[in-house]
Amino acid sequence: MKKITIAIDGFSSTGKSTLAKQLAKKLHYIYVDTGAMYRAVTLFAMRSGFIEEDKIDEDSLIKTLDDIDLKFVFNSNLGFAEMYLNGENVEKEIRTMPVSKNVSQVSVIAAVREKLVAMQQAMGVDKGIVMDGRDIGTVVFPDAELKIFMTASPEKRAVRRYKELLDRGEDVVYADILENVQKRDHIDSNRAISPLKRAEDAIEFDNSDLGLEDQFQRMYEHSLRVIESQA
Image 1 (cartoon, helix red, strand yellow):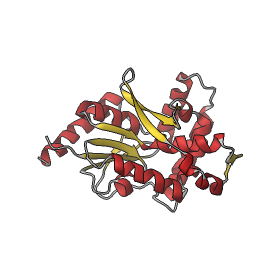
Image 2: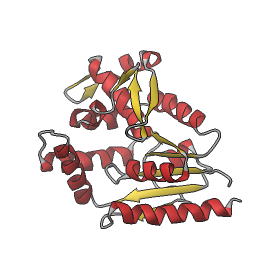
Image 3: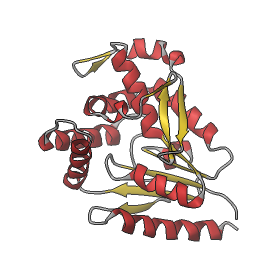
């Protein structure tokens, strides 16, 4: 069966990564979480002292981009690849609130996006890939055979994120999570470079009131129809 490229875009905390992982596993495709890549660069910037009090030293980060090595290393116990920054597994650290608060301002930097988009396009040259992010269907893979744009209400997304962080043992406040979700929505949708928007040929999928299994079944069945149409 002919392989395709599946591009999943959408707002933060809509479950893009969860759906992408499920589809990739079921279809035996490669899964790439582009958000993890931007989060890893953000972590690098924070560790390097380039981000202080919500302000970023863009010039210093840009000058050190060549010092950033990103790799996805498959974890057979988990069933998916984890993010490695300069040889270190940073999968857990990049999911924390401090990184979440700063990732949007890092992702708007043109040089950062240029570096990561080039890496992402190289990963998908042979198709058979499921990639999620903010600009996959519009910039990274504008010719993807299947494009999905995921959305849900900010409140529902904040609740999901809140529960996820509590389960990890983090001390968080729901109001702070909601504020962060709304702030990221605004930044992602209004940035000058590769703003978050639905590709004209993408299907919009609102999962505000859907469970994980229901959303997966719907998108998996749709994926099969698209794949079969390419045969």
